[in-house]
Length: 148
Image (cartoon, rainbow, N blue to C red):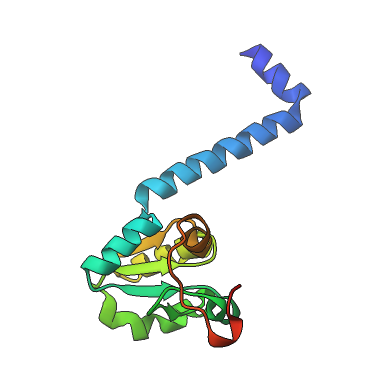
């Protein structure tokens, strides 16, 4: 035990880094264990859209949304989502698919919606980057932003 203390005192930066990394890993484990939304792939999202009445919420900013988005998706930027929760109340029991550009903002939106009492929240992994790039799924493109 004395050697560990001596090591920690001699290498305090390494010891501090170990403590921080351990804390972040434990926090991530707890967060993923207690999250109430489900993470699904774009293909499973398409399957859910085809077989159930779903609501698609795109939490990207309006400029990103107008470039391309999933058909019938509603644009509610993440920054405006808390204000829009009242207008989404009718969808509390409906499956909700959340998309963003890479999947980061949609995870935050998923947490927000589950805390607000929405029962079936699904976050699309990889976001629109995976939807368009990896899976080559169809998107709606605004008329003035046609892709080559």
